[in-house]
Length: 150
Image 1: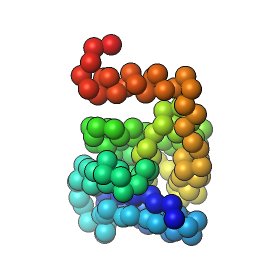
Image 2: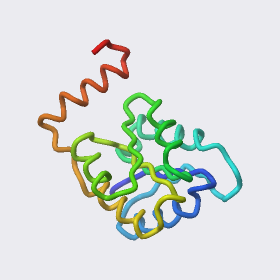
Image 3: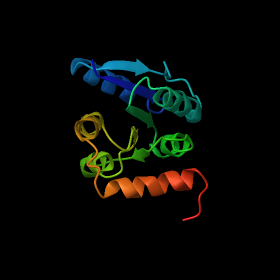
Image 4: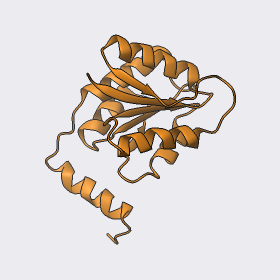
């Protein structure tokens, strides 16, 4: 069974649940790291929970939802080995997997509606890293992450 991790703050709670239902209907085992209600909460907590699960190998992919997707992507990208991309169009959601080997899709519930969110998820999960010339670029990103001078 395919696994994927989901997380959201209060701004993304409802959309996260819609995405969760969609993924479960497609046969995914969904690991939900919260939040579990619409009460105000801090997005970095849920971004960190999701990223730690990816780092530990619980799943290769995750999806984070907040109001804009920006805060989640900023928090997620602070974790070693996480390549989070905030997307609001399907072209970017697909290409971030193909070219950047992104492992976390971030989106904003106040930016995209449920229909577009599902399209973004589909574009993201159905694309696979192309490798080839993109490997060198990912290595350069890892060098930056490790404090190397480019």
